[in-house]
Image 1 (cartoon, one colour):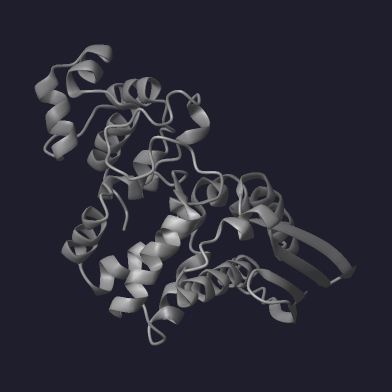
Image 2 (cartoon, one colour; image 1 turned 90 degrees about the horizontal axis):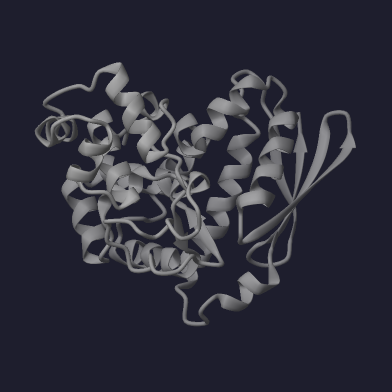
Length: 284
C-alpha cells in the first residue's frame, strides 16, 4: 500500500498541523499550486520538493519510499499538534506499536478486502486513514489489540489468512528506513539480527530482546514482555488477539533472519513460558 508523492505532502502537512495557506506561504508558492500537488494533478519541481521537505521536516527519500518517518524530527510539544483524527493523540502512549510494524495487516486488508473496507473500518474507530503513511506513529498496544480482536471476531483475520499476513513481515516496506539505511547494507544474517535487536530495544516499548552467541552459526534469542507492559494488559482482552500479537512478534523474528536471499536461517522456539516469554534457537 505505497503512498503517492501527493499523499506524502498532504499527510506530512496534516501531521505538522499546517494549513495549505501556511505551507504555500512558507515555500513561496500559490495555494492553488500546493492544492494541485496534493491532489496529484501537478508534480512538484525538485526545488519545491526540497523546500517542502525542509519546512515539514521530512526525508526527501519519502518521495520514492511512499511513507514517512517523522517523530524523531519533532519536539515533544509538536508531536500531537496534528490535523488528523485518532483516539489517542492527546498523549504519547507508554506501551505502543508503530504503524510500521502493523503495515502487513493493513496491506492485507487493503489487498483482500479493498480500500473501501479498510477506510471504513479505520474511520469507524475515529482513525484518519492518512496515519498509515506515518510509519513511526505510535498506536497504544491495548488499542491495537482491541482493533485486532474486532478484526478476528468479524472473520477479517482468521487461521486461513494469518500466514499470508505474516509472510510480508520481512519486506523492505515494513522495516521502513531501517531497511534502506541499515539492513540492506549488511550481508550477514546474524549481523542484521544484532542490528534488529538493538533497534527493537531502543524503540520497542513492549518487549526486551536479548541475543546470545552460542557458536559460530548458532545464536539464542530471548524475547520477554516487560513487566509493566504485561500489567497494563486488560484482563478482558481478546485471548485470540493476544495470541495473534505473540505470533506476530515471532514472525518478525523469523523473517528478519531470512531477509537476505539465499541465506537460510532456521528459527525454532526452544522455550516458551506463556505469551510473550520465548527463547529461540537460530542456526544458519
